[in-house]
Image 1 (cartoon, rainbow, N blue to C red):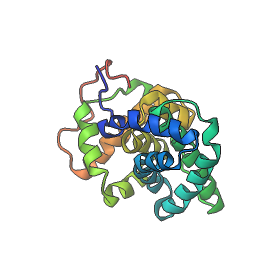
Image 2 (cartoon, rainbow, N blue to C red):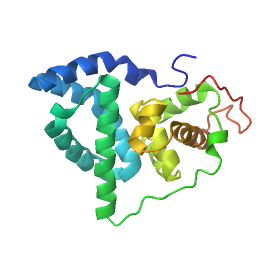
Image 3 (cartoon, rainbow, N blue to C red):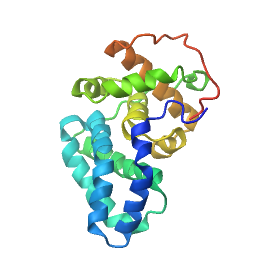
Image 4 (cartoon, rainbow, N blue to C red):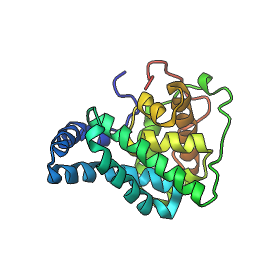
Length: 205
């Protein structure tokens, strides 16, 4: 089972990130810069998928709050990614409210019945999500699918962590990410993605 479709890149830095955060909490500014460099690319990609061209400004607001509240954070590298994503999401939703843009809602319907398909879909779409075009496509997904894909694939959170950020059940977030990835895969021309893909109970993250 292992990590399943989890993005490997983000996880590879979790040890270094956790150590940097611990040093930063002790007042090491250089360590905070290290944590920023590790987290910022994914955070910015996530915010681009929500607020588009205003992502840089929203990220700046988020990092001000992250720096201010750093002493209150407790956890490891993966936990820090989830914590910063939660703060960034709050700032993004505040921004959308100020812009009088209401986040679209999408009914989950029978999402709990739709389990993740082949893990290769995650990997192939992950490669494509480095492009601005792909992030624009993400913004076209239903809100629940867009946020789930961004948290799981761009930031690299596991299912339970993404669920905590969104305040939803892990199964619903996992399935929303799967549906969003399937839709993106079709739009990006990734082969071998079908609605009747094998369902693997073991890939539960």
